[in-house]
Length: 180
Ligand SMILES: Cc1cc2nc3c(=O)[nH]c(=O)nc-3n(C[C@H](O)[C@H](O)[C@H](O)COP(=O)(O)O)c2cc1C
View 1 (cartoon, rainbow, N blue to C red):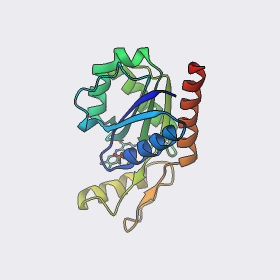
View 2: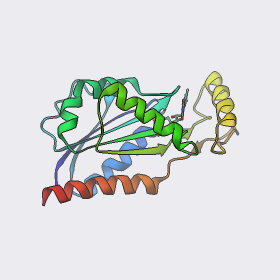
View 3: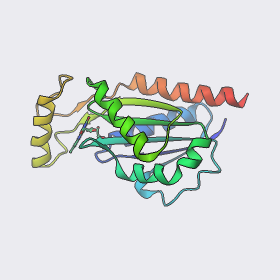
């Protein structure tokens, strides 16, 4: 049982949903989880936590900039603790090489090598986007590999929740074994 700091950067809410799902699972394993939207976390003190997990979505080929700033500021502490990073994108659904490239770029930019990394498919939330974003995303979805949906009258969610569950379970199993 330990204390875990979980922070995420999300624009349309899918990464926040994944973070929520992970936090519930970790709590179910008896951990004390502090979860925050990175935009609302004013310089959190990570020293007091046993482990840290960070999640960020991709927009225009880049991870959430608030998460990049957070990790840059804290990578010394992150390097000393069990840590994990999950990256949420459409590329993770059908273009793994591109999704891995985003993470490599993130690691170079921030100087942080997370203990565990996961790539999760994100969502196409056409019914929530404004006019311009809806049409831009339809075009991108049509051009990208992965057979992404282009019917703008509905949303598509590509997150594989079993994979999210497995990632969170591996994370907690490692913490439990480090504890015993
Ligand atoms: C404007 C916009 C740009 C995006 N750019 C990319 C991209 O470059 N590569 C990619 O794989 N996914 C891209 N996506 C897909 C997002 O990563 C996906 O929708 C994800 O679920 C967003 O997570 P969030 O809701 O937590 O912000 C983009 C989505 C939007 C709306």
